[in-house]
Image (cartoon, rainbow over all chains, first blue to last red; front, side, top):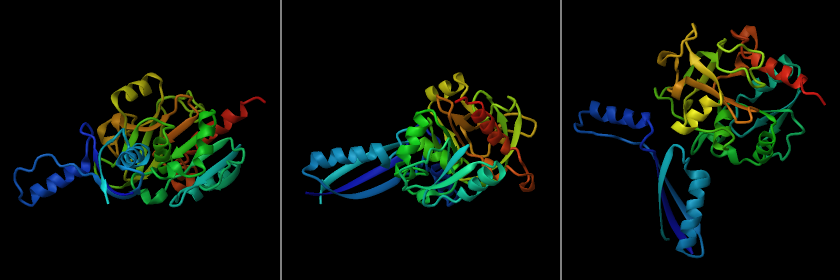
Amino acid sequence: MLFHCEVNISPRQDILDPQGDAVAKALANLGFAGVGEVKVGKYLILELEAADEAAARSMLDSMCHQLLANPITEDYVAAVRPA
Amino acid sequence: MKVAVIIFPGSNCDHDALHVTSKVMGWDVVPVWHESGSLGGADLVLLPGGFSYGDYLRCGAIARFSPIMSAVIKHAQGGGLTLGICNGFQVLLEAGLLPGALLRNTSLEFRCQWTNLQVQTNDCPFTQELQVGEILRIPIAHGDGNYFAPPDTLRQLNEQRRVVFRYCTAEGLITPEANPNGSVENIAGILSEGRNVLGLMPHLERASEAALGSADGKRVFDSLAKSLAEVSW
């Protein structure tokens, strides 16, 4: 079965995110008031072939742990749905 | 000394590494393409700087899985001398051969400049000929050199004296002003637990000949030469 997967990778909460800070400042400079914390992350889209959704989810988790996200500096949220 | 300089797609500091190890140090040096399965019996494995895989996903994240890396990991875990410079350091971190991670420079600028490094320990093959407190003038060129480690890891690194270099002023003061990238505790280079793997951001291979402005980097290669000469067979 073909599955459509999305992974949102973001910098961990306790880590300084200079990109996020730079974007927040840029927004403030543009005149947008009330901009709080900004975090800049990554968004990945994958098409996966798997026996069922549980297998796809398990494969995706392994991919995130091994390659897609660095657990020291990043958190991730992964979603799977039939394609 | 037999040296293997690993070349990934996107590595661009391999030629300088090959030059210094072969022409300046006079060692027996072999360039090793990342798809090779063998290090050719090298004593020292050098992972050079550059932009392996275009820094895609994260710096060194994909190179860390290149075919040659199983041989590199085996070499390092077996106590073999392993030196990762800049992107090489990033690959070693992603491979888990060194603890911690590298983030984008806090300034968000790519910093290409001279730095002063203070030697923190000479209890390893890479700095055994240097004095603790000695200052080396070495250039950096990186956008993602901000070393980060969780508090427990940092504590362990300090307790085990595995921080090898810290960014400092010309007078040897460890200050925020001397820190070019925001690295925690001004850390520029660290050792593995076995003290046989060194990863550092500054380019030793760009400061090993006086004509380039500093030959301080050669002192690390000289330490390695001495340490190998001391190994009795």
